[in-house]
Image 1: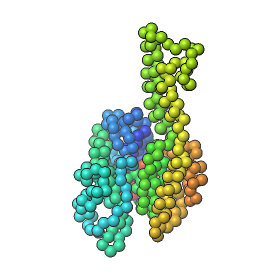
Image 2: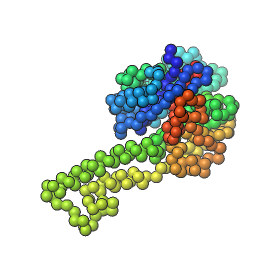
Image 3: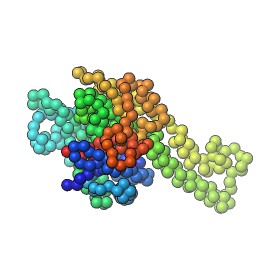
Length: 362
């Protein structure tokens, strides 16, 4: 068995990974993040296997990972996570029965889904826990892409479970805490005790992180180039051009042809980060959990992910939520034998480290 394990995530903006040593006190050995071109992936789904494979190869080479064994963390908005109660039975029997029991809850046929059940409590002959369902085609696509660069998928884990695992050491074993990972397009909320996830919600919210701004710029630039080419072609063909003194649309810089591309880019740049909406939805999620009979109060809120660094996000959260909160970076959740990451990378790696911790701590 390898002496290290790699936690890996594929997002719309990048592929990132963290390599941890195996054993009772895992340490961060290496880490890395490589940007993806537009339309290569979405959430945890691969759209362009070739482009993602190139990025993965660059990631392994640049970070100098020792191991080719990886645990894949997924956080797609298409993943179903909900509380579920069923009859207690042996794990192997439950795996066989689960597809028939939950078919009506799934957006796809059970034969096209990857199912998992995380048991939490049992009363009599009834066991309650978290049901997780993902589209099998999406998972298989990522695994086959990993195989292109000879990376072996040792398991697939819900990214939110990794978040609960990562922040477990920051609270007392009996504390009820929430970890909020604010990603580029998906915010994950997991409520846990002692690293055990009790409640999970995935919120589809776009946040203006540095990575999403880079992607938007890459999308706008080709539009501007096409518009400029069209302007040049019009002038060269003698079809006429607008007089510099004529009335032109605001922001067109004197050429009506280039206005659509520039207007679209300006609209993206002017789009608010949605910090207020994000805070309201996180608050609503926490209130939903707290409103249930017998629910204990949250003692603290851990916030991570690149979205936590976006201007206005933390102030909106603190204004909307009374629970004490702390921003968590990679160095807070694991010791390191490598120079520590900084900026957005340090925030994004918290969940990635948590994914690896599932294997590293065994």
